[in-house]
Image 1 (cartoon, rainbow, N blue to C red):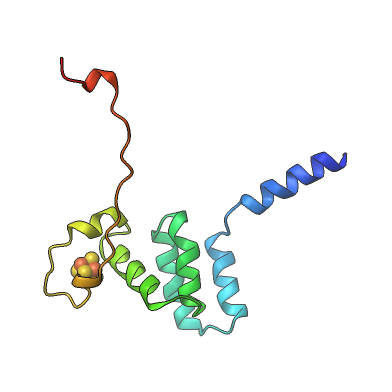
Image 2: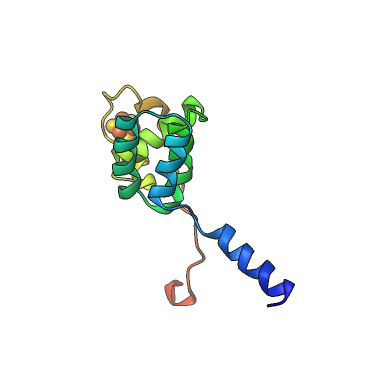
Length: 115
Ligand code: SF4
């Protein structure tokens, strides 16, 4: 096995996101209590991979209030962050500060152009 192959394998390994259990082990290593780890494990299993890193920072107490609000609203909307903008609960304490995510606009195909 040559060095280039080893480098390629190491790069691929770095890109693999941690599993739920790896995140939970990080929490245990950081001294997070057992009940919090249990509840965090349930949430990690429900959310998609892109949200897990941010959520783990929250559990490790390394996230700002703004990030926590974003995470809370996203969880509230079933982990569909683009749904937060459509929240109708104006009585919620977070309504006025909820994050508004914009979907990326994609170019329409020529088939959609008016004739
Ligand atoms: S503002 Fe809306 S999305 Fe955010 S926590 Fe409140 S009800 Fe949920």
